[in-house]
Image 1 (cartoon, helix red, strand yellow):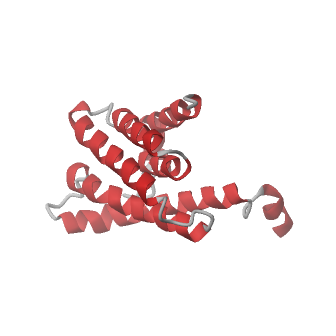
Image 2: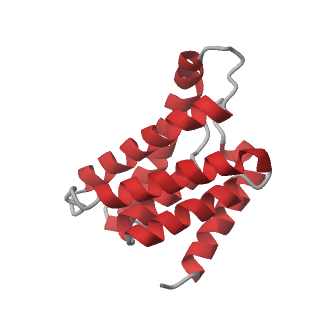
Length: 164
């Protein structure tokens, strides 16, 4: 198992957590970078790689607030293990099934993230889920969709250049 891509992914999570979060946020919506990278690793790599990366991503993501490190490691580790098991049941040749697996994973991540980490100015979890989690899921899904379009070749510089 090559480690360099995983270290670069972890550095991207740390960079996003420290610098990019406020720059790329649209209102209360922000990109779930740790979950998005974990789901991409889980779709393309083995079960052990997804589990290991989930735990490591939880450590890196929770480094600014160590009191939440345990729950973050558990949530991301569970998400990586669950998605690595589910990818066997999906036809990953289809862009729709990969996108469905990505959105399902983002929803699965946003539930404990909203319960434990989001304060939306109200005591209502439903309000926090509607105000913060749903826009963040849509924003993260859009970024994941762009990644899939670039990866499959449906979106490239030459195709965009032909439009203009």
